[in-house]
Length: 118
Image (cartoon, rainbow, N blue to C red; front, top):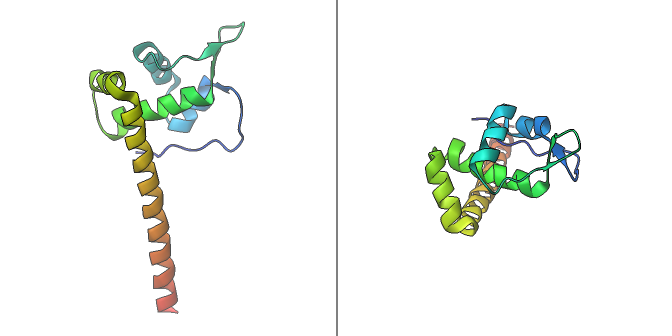
């Protein structure tokens, strides 16, 4: 599973191609999730192109976590978000923080091993 890639430049709106690239998924999946989950509400320009806000991307990240990383069904993810989106969001944030701590600890371990070998 390819992890979420943070965008380098902060924008107000992101096009669907940019959002799909952030999650390494096809644009059709983003459009499908938009239909399935009412928490994704991109604005549309005059041409009808979807423009996603940072909040939309956070909601997609939460759905991505529930469906792709935790393996929940769409109905299971919908139910979890409907019952308590704050709880699901807090759990996801805690997991992100723990993963970051794990990465930092692994870096420290690698540095210590390199010093030991020197």
